Image (cartoon, rainbow, N blue to C red; front, side, top):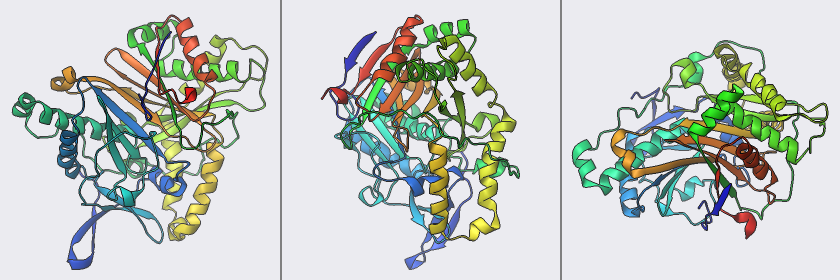
Length: 447
């Protein structure tokens, strides 16, 4: 298992429903409602829990910052879903068209996934930074989920490469790629069914604890592995790559923290599910739900195969359209209740914070899978790799993100613990299964 370190601080078309309101000078300003999931993020976000995620692309050439700024200036006006600022109304938060110049592209000089202050960012809810060969897109989750962020980052990268390479500009022009979506449909509202059954876990899970990094510091550890080797191992186990990696995480917590002993609380991994394939959607708004993979060690000495079987069955029992529909229909039904709609935002926020706290403490961690990332053929020679990771949240001070590009899959840990025993146990188990792993870290725990 090879190991290397970054020395960097941070980390080494349709348009949906639109509305307009009058402002001074009788200028029409577009505004839009938040999707069902997005209502939560402004309520709970702050310096200690930013609700900002990062997706980045590493090129095979150094980034030219002036060209990246030009690319952002060109691309942003084409994306209604990013050209927004957040406003607070009497009953709900809402989006309003921003229209200001694009935020300034900056060289990365701090830790990732910091809280985004609108008033210091031209009122935008995302930021673009760069470091050497890497372009970083950080997004406040209120705007969109990982698939929406990736949609924007790829188009930004395409435009940058066209500016950097005249032959691409001449061949492709400035039109958006055919696979790029501008759809702003609220797919939650379109697909929900009246529901009264709550589907989310609220019983407390086993929570990982430990010495924290100094305030504001943020650990990142990437593990690179060949997709072909992963597929072979997963085929032998009879599971998917996602099921295998979630089970390995549960196993690493069980072996490194519980030391193979029973626990009063289950190890429960929240797994976001992209709903677009289930409901034929290509929206760029949030459209996901959380399912939970649960392993409750009630006896002594579970073998990995037992943990894998338990986790796999737990996930598979929830991965059907009917169950996923019930999960988000419960939330949408509550939002649409007349009484809830009439309650002032101040009181809604109090209720949402309470509900969030109970559900957040019901999971040991979150592991999200962005999936296999593909790019337009003309740009492949210039792109090396993609990465993604999540910020910390209440009770969850270590999270995992999966994405792959070409024949390389990268599992990225983000954390604010000093100890790295769970990460070591995770990658050790994978190498024991015959998969080559190369580790890369920003090394904050060694400073």
